[in-house]
Length: 276
Image: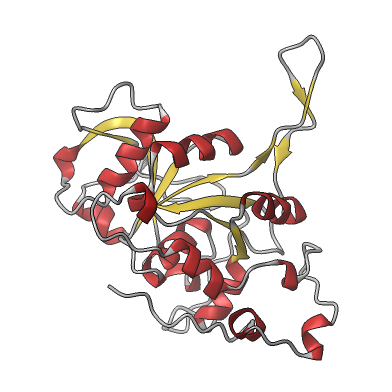
């Protein structure tokens, strides 16, 4: 499936190289980060979308990470996101090094049903309604403990393997699928839904890999401790993206790109206070 047109109406100068006087007017989002510091959604899709010609894709064919910040009016955390089909041991090792290390795999509701991934609990009381399914490991003979970068990459790719079925996974495991809302970010403005939106826009299979970016903090001399650690936010996410050549955008910009804040049935988007 070819990616759709990469026209970005909200940021025309990012696509055609032209600028206008209004492009340089102060335009701060509620998190204090200028819109001009973010990459356009078109650029982000392009980086995410390098479509492989083989499955699993060769290293030179894999799409790139992107960083997506949740709504600037909320917690303003950044998730490092990759298409599941593009997961490799090297990319998962990078993800684990720079994030919380809790690797989740957003999947479409249809894929969750096809793979028989039920919700982790019958009554979800998680603050943001994040739809965790049972955790899984690939049942591939190459799996070892399930927790290594190699094994988690293998599990992520297995989720979108066209030949995979319910028996392709061991339960519980070390990877946490998240079931996305069918209405995408128009229905729920979370990283789970944003991941599936980017997969759809990039012509990828409907599953991704994500984890929250964190700040390491400072080493405490002589102790197995670090001080001033925490979640990476706003400007820190932009700086991290520039350092590693990763496109950075917001869910708000993605919603604007998609053209509205309703789900197509007149229902307002679900407001989420957390990271997914």
